[in-house]
Image 1 (cartoon, rainbow, N blue to C red):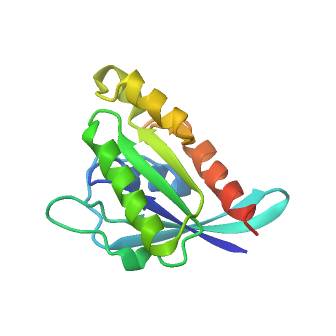
Image 2: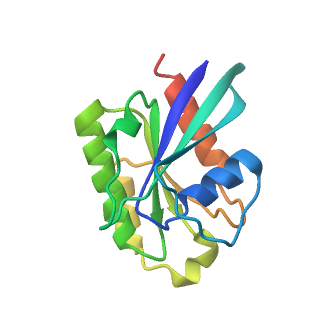
Length: 165
């Protein structure tokens, strides 16, 4: 069984680094802008069932480039990524989620608050985090650099997509 999961978020929040950490177990300090989409596959076990998780690492949306909504067609789940050191990226991730669901309908989603290894530099507030939790978001504090909660977040979204069947 295959499940397509799309990474959504602003540029430079760590989507590619999270995908690389999850798929290959590596982290690079080099910043590379994703052009279009990069697709990786990882076979995992969910509820004793093999699942090919297709991870679509989409270009980040910023003022210079827009996300092609066509990339989201057929997605079984969304991994929203915000950078804890840049609180404005949270609003961008939520806006992209709203656009995706208004175009293709609701699918499971999870919100990763990334760069937790830089917690002392975070601009996201406890109030913002509490509001997300109160709104029903499943949150993971992640670090592509250290690997913190990366596997757990992808395992969560994989399980959520599988439970839709």
